Image (tube, rainbow over the protein chains, first blue to last red):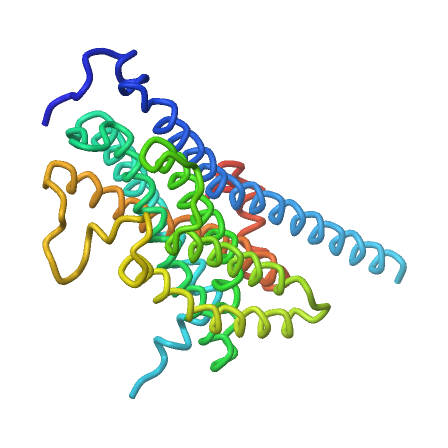
Length: 68
Length: 255
């Protein structure tokens, strides 16, 4: 196994094909990262929502106990 | 015959707890495979004699296309299981597989387009393979849209599942398109019946990338199914227990 390019700028340029190859890499990495980040963010939101629901129910229960 | 395992698999709680144990390992494996395979393919694999360096797009294009197709099978199978056994979890898998598959199909088309420009001289051609992949993208989007087109969740699930099943007709067409119509797209490099028509130095990183994409698909699907489970089971005590734990331990919110 051998590194195929002379230096870093050669790796970027890829003998004129760099723009195509790196565009494919950039879009793929971006979208795949989004596919992982998005459910993690949604999960955080759902957790917060449920926590709010729980505390609201708690308050209602406390209030009804005091009222009685 | 003991069917307990089957019913247990249908239990959202069982799924959630099992995947909690698997996810860190699967995530690490995915990361290693994808980063390793990509560096290997982009910088260390020898360049193609005819296509030069543009051929390196294969390391994204082929795995994305594989998963776009495999993902469709999975989505349709989940839809069928949902229709037959009315399994809640199965519809959740179907619902989460649709956007995931749509993104992978888009990636297959996009990487194909930027590969097509230096190789065929055009970003887009109405080649049989390309066109059938575009139909696959529309099928994914259709399943996704149908899911939300009805007021009743149950009707939406059923309609999506039926569209997904009818759409499987397209899958063998995509596979065979390169053999039935001799248009621009090259025939399959990897088949089950023959040795790959590719030098091992080029083929090995591709294999790593394909494995990496399969693992990635599993991780992404599991993550979104878990969110779906939490949202739908929000009233149950086990979900509330999780939320309480997470609130106490802020780190827990990330896992």
